[in-house]
Length: 328
Image 1 (cartoon, helix red, strand yellow):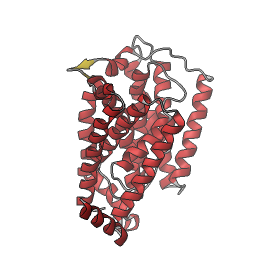
Image 2 (cartoon, rainbow, N blue to C red):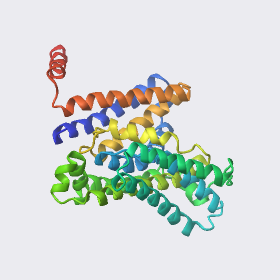
Image 3 (cartoon, rainbow, N blue to C red):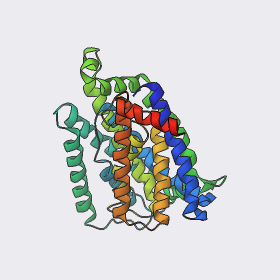
Image 4 (tube, helix red, strand yellow):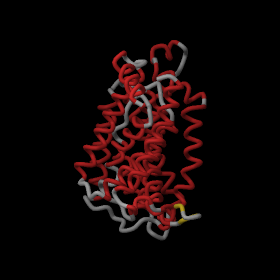
């Protein structure tokens, strides 16, 4: 997908998100209220954090299926190590983030050095982490409540907006610069677009791969720590939805699932779209099965659409667009 097509995809996902939010009023007028918007922004913030790591791995041409498990690990460890009084938080959070990044390095080593397919490597890591969590907690996380300083990010408001949402703005700017504007980001784009040519050009593909998975693990652990403040107490499934959500946000945001093309701003738009959609599905009382089915359908639809755009538009696709324009 060229730069112009990618820019249109990014603008399109924000436009569709805004339209979906406005149409939410047909379900319930309360969905257009300020509290509803705050909920969308807050839920979207967690997806944005997780999706930066997932997006940079997908940009590389990989996939991280361990994100949900690492998010749960972050929340469980923070709840176990830090009481509600915030004691131990100065060393606990850096340790948790380091563990997350270390598990990401483990994923990257398996993919880059051992040649294990990313799907298998990250799935196996996720299963191992889930098993460790189960053994560590004996099926019941020790903490009953989140540390107050972490809970404040979701429950304290500045100008009517949660503190976490304000904090996510500099995160978005920094992440966009890393992925889309830095030399590191350009190298990842190049490696994802054509790995063989990138190696010939002298890019350190193994180092880049391990670095991307380390970033993904770090972001997952960070998301788990912050998510604990929102849910109030750790659970063994708190990170489960974020594996598919992070993939969906990246794909809906216009990134190529095959790597080499994508924009973090598009991923942000995809995360907000999922936040609005989740809010609507909750209002409709949809079960978990239907919610997953709808998300899967959206991912497939996005893959089909952007796949057609990446191929430059087949004759049939161009004809379809021409017919739509003629009707309008």
